[in-house]
Image 1 (cartoon, one colour):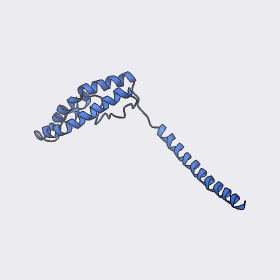
Image 2 (cartoon, helix red, strand yellow):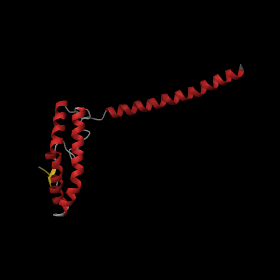
Image 3 (tube, rainbow, N blue to C red):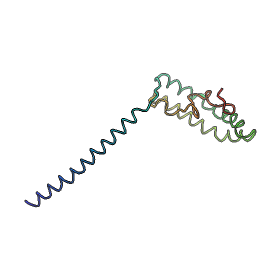
Length: 134
């Protein structure tokens, strides 16, 4: 009987200390959630996100000539055409994927896939001639 009582008290002490650690970790998580909720998020209307996805899928191929033209001004004339041919397909796949995700989720991810400086909503909003937005 003493062994069972000692085992029972040991289990209570062991699990009691773990529950105290769990409460402390819950407090930490709660404070992290509070700080993350203060971050400003941008949301997109579902119809706008769906149409943005369709437009990005239809115009994703324009990333190749855009990168060729932009790199021709930024890198070196002539060499920029080669680097643009290398970078363009990756941007094309990125825009194609972002458009597909916009269509599938109806904008559920908001603007998290897009960055107005490096990867804007539409291909015509990106830098075309030497870093100037046209």
